[in-house]
Length: 146
Ligand code: RB5
Picture 1 (spheres, protein in one colour):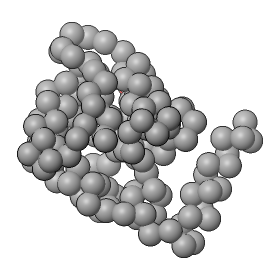
Picture 2 (cartoon, rainbow, N blue to C red):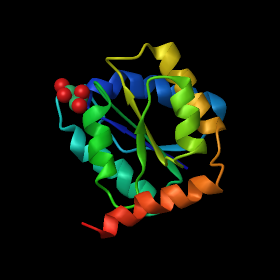
Picture 3 (cartoon, rainbow, N blue to C red):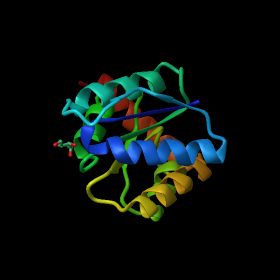
Picture 4 (tube, rainbow, N blue to C red):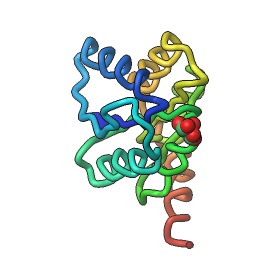
C-alpha cells in the first residue's frame, strides 16, 4: 500500500499520479487534500509521513507546489526519509542508496510526463543495502541525537 498526499498546489498532479498508479495496479490510500482550496502542506506531509512510519503503508508520495515544504514536513516524522526529486536519476538513487520511503514532487516545477516517469523510477528501484545500510542507519541515529 502506498500513501499519497498533497496540498492545493499539488492537487492536480496528485490526481494524475493516482490515475497512473491505478493503471499500474499499485494500491494507494489518499490522505488528501481533496479539493483545490487553499490549505497547509504540513498537514498532508505529516499524514503521509505517519502512514509510512507506522507501517500502515510501505511507501509514500507527497506533492506541493515546489515539493520543498511538504518534504520538509514529512521528514519531521520519525522514521521518514523523504526525497524531493526532479529527475529520474535522483529517484533511482534515493531508493538504491538512501532507502527513501517517501518521494516528494513539485507540481509547479515538473511537467506531468516527467513527474510520472519519476514516480515509475522510484517505484521500480530497490535499496541496495551493504555500505548504504550503514549510512542510512547513521541518518536514522540522528533522530535520537536531538
Ligand atoms: C503553496 O502556495 C506553496 O507554498 C506550497 O505548495 C509549496 O510550494 C511549499 O513549499
